[in-house]
Image (cartoon, rainbow, N blue to C red; front, side, top):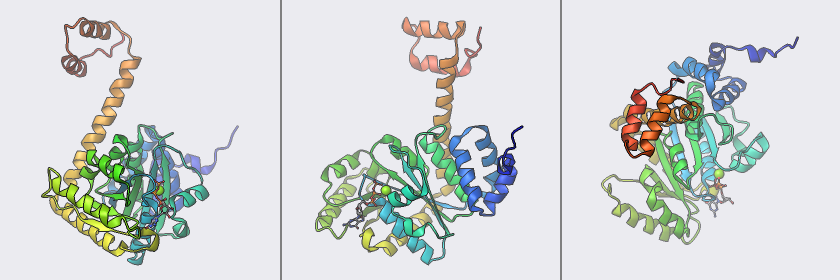
Length: 323
Ligand SMILES: Nc1nc2c(ncn2[C@@H]2O[C@H](COP(=O)(O)OP(=O)(O)OP(=O)(O)O)[C@@H](O)[C@H]2O)c(=O)[nH]1
Ligand SMILES: [Mg+2]
C-alpha cells in the first residue's frame, strides 16, 4: 500500500484557505494545479473565487530584449517602497523555464526572491492546460485570491498569441527600445493598439529621443488618437523614470475604474468563453463518428451547405450523438 503525502490529500477548500492565508508553499501548489487545468483546477478556482477581484492586473509586453524584466524588477522595488505586495507572472511562449535559479537569472528580479511581499512565477506554454492566456488568467486569479495587491504579467509581444495573453491584464504597458525601427513598424499592426501606457526604455541610449518622436507621430495617426496614451522614457537598468511610470500606471488604473473595470472583465470572460468553447467543439468534432455528422459534412462538401449555416446547425443540433 502506498502512503500518499498529506499534501496530496488536501481538498480544494483546504488548499484555498491556505492560499487565502498567503501561505507561499500553498500558493505555489495552487498555481501548479491551475496551470494543469482540468477538474482539480476548476474546483480550486471555485473555492477561491470570492477572494478574487481585488488585485490590479498589469501587463508588460514588448519585443525580446527591450528591457521588460529589468523594468519589472525596478517596478517591484517602487511598489515595495510603498509597502504594496506584488506578484510577477513571466510568460514565456517559446522556451519553458523551470527552477528558481534559472528563473531568477532570466527575469532579472533576483534581488526580490527573498522578499515575502513578492511572488515571482514563470509560466511556459508547454504543459499549460487549455492555452497560455487561459493558464495565465487562472494563475492571476490564484495570486489575486492570495492577497497580492499587484499582479504583473510579463510577456514577449511578437505575434497575435502574445496579445491574447495581454487580454488577461487590466492595464497594458507596451515597452520598446531605441533604434528598433522595424519593431516599431511591426507594432503598428497590433501592439500599439493595445497599449494603455507606452514606454521607451534604455533612455540612456542617444537614439531614444528619435524613437519617442516616431512613436508620438504614430500615436497621432491612430484611429483613436483622441485616447491619450501616456508615453514615458525610462532607463530601467539605472531605475530612471520609474516613479513616473508608477504614477502613470496608477492614473491609467483610476481612469479604468471610472470607465468600468467590471465591463472589461466581462469582455475578457467573453473572449475566454469563446476560446474554450471553440476548443471543446474542435475536440468533440474530432472524436465524433456518426451518421448525422457525416451528413452535415457531405452536404458541405457538395456545396449544398455553406460553412456558416453548417456551424449554426452544428451548435443547435445533436450531431454529437454517435448513431
Ligand atoms: N542601456 C540599457 N540597457 C538596459 C536597460 N534596461 C535593460 N537593459 C539591458 O537590456 C538587456 C535585456 O534586458 P531584459 O530586462 O532581460 O529584457 P526583456 O525585454 O525582459 O528580454 P526578454 O524577456 O528576453 O524578451 C539586458 O542586457 C539589460 O541589462 C536600460 O535602461 N539601458
Ligand atoms: Mg524578460
